[in-house]
Amino acid sequence: MKSTLRILSFSKPYVFLVVLNSLLNLLSALFSLFSISLIIPILGLLFGTIEPTNDLSDNLSFNNLKDFVYNRVYELILNSGHVLTLGIICLFAIMCTVFKNAFRYLALYTLTPIRNNIIRDIRKKLFNQILKLQIPFFNKFKKGDLISRVTNDLIEIEWSIMGVLELFIKDPITILIFLSTLFYMNFKLTLISLIFIPITALIISSISKSLKQKSKLSQFKFASIVSLLEDYFTNIKLIKSLKENNFILSKFTDHNESLKNINNKVLWRKDLASPLSEMLSTIVLVIIIWIGGNIVLNENFDAESFIGYLLVFSQILPPAKSLTSAFYSVQKGAAAADRIFEILLSNKTERTGLKNIKKFKIISFKNVSVKYKDDYLLNDINFNIESNKRTAIVGESGSGKTTLVELLLKHHSITSGEIKIDNNCISEINTKSLISVVTQDILIFNDTIFNNVTMTNPKSKIDDVKKVCKQVGISSMIDSLSEKYETIIGSGGINLSGGEKQKISLARALLSENPILILDEPTSALDSDSDKVIFEQINKLNTKKTVITITHKLKSVIDFDNTIVLSQGKLISQGNHNFLSKNCSEYKKLCDIKKINK
Image (cartoon, rainbow, N blue to C red):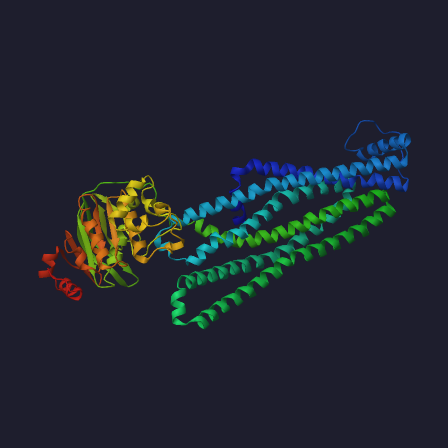
């Protein structure tokens, strides 16, 4: 129930529509009641029981409602005859039915924007929260699981919202109006019928609890399948080259079969709602007929009023049945809501209100260590990075190079020590306004080349974009395209080669106004000539940006101001190429491997 109320909290901006929807449902229920109530005088006409009450006042009141109507009908019979009176009453019944359905449509019309606006707001807030999650918390989830929460779980919530609105607005209004009428018609009979409501609610509640548990399991299994598909489609070329079709198909079949079995149990429980509520409603109706029949035979309760009572009572059954289905829907949606609010209510998000700085003098690593379980990824690291200098970070694979850079991006937490930018602890600084990054994993959107390049600086003009594209050596290729900078790259940059995508990523970073440029193997997909061109341009940035480069291509960074040498998470040495060539055996070994001499 808590998740349901949280869903309802998203309706606050649309309270006017909710009130309007309630009013329209109220009018629909009232006209439905009028159309049904007119059956009683019609039956009175047919049975010949409509007679005037001599002591009746002409003033309408709550206590004399039936007698007042009968007197008016009797007068109409005297003036117009039985047939015309019957026709007029039937016409009124038709008009009430028309108004009932018109207001019902308008209620549904106002419900549509409520429903869609709430889903839009939840999806936007959920996606925004995912973007704010800290990397360690984010990594707890599979990508497919997150995709499932933003898509499939929201569909479940959408239907749950429909159930919630029926649960709290439409059906209760209808039931209360008709129930009040039943109390007016025969208090004793209605009071007896209410005894069965708690029994019905108890039966429905016991079944719905297991429905929520099975629904949550279904959503978890669906998320697992989405994760499998995401992995398979991302690595489809490798899968085909390894000829692992049978293994992949077997694994997918197992998950798919498990999801089918769970969904069967979910639907069996959900589908039980309608026949169960109908069966209970019929039992109650039969009991009412038996008790009411005795009242008609033994007390002052005329036959046409009893038939009218049964007709009104029968109109409570559909909304009661719908209410039961809505309750099941809410329980099913609550399982999805729990998964959504696990993200929305997480406090593992990036801090806000951090300092935005554009200029600095020095970045200091002081006794920095990063530990994962029992192993140190970095151990007691000490060095400085000066503003507008070029720093290279080198070492064998697994030496901790990427972890070191990710500390600046705050993708890892420091186990001990501290990183300071001037006198500010890095945890107090908004590094997004400070650092631009180019990694081996290239981010390319299915958009124009211009929009892909200007992501880091949306205010950039076409001349700025052309300038950086020329710097990274991709301008001639772009100019050869029919749409030039307005060319759509395609999903994941499918229309570009690996080297071209990397150059787009580099151009994007160079266009950024952020003072620090981090390059993690920025030319891994480029040939030696392109690599030389790129680093020539990077070397020209030494008075404009602070450059930090991770690379295995030592030849590209031999002119850098400082090179950090890492081995097994420890800083072995640092200095320029000449100093390290003479004094650092680890660096000399790396140079020998790459056949670098200077």
